[in-house]
Image (cartoon, rainbow, N blue to C red; front, side):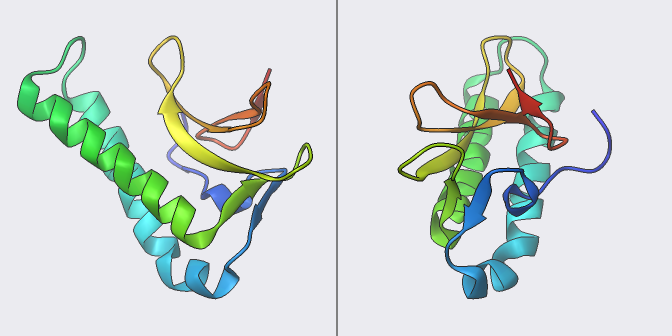
Length: 112
């Protein structure tokens, strides 16, 4: 993964409904994503209880901030919320709530 972590607003097919809030929270979203990655990389394998709690809290912060700015996938109708979550291999990705879900890696590339 590169050093550049995409803000959800930069992802193809994602619309930010509350642009005014996004301008104020963009830095917070970036810091929350970076904190989530830092915690996830700190303990390989099964994390301890405290590290697991920290990882969940960091991930919830990212998702709460994305919800606050109204990050929505527009690749199918109707637009759906997006979230950061681990994929089946444990890598953090962005995905929407469409069925099937659209997915992006943290570099901004859409995943199959």
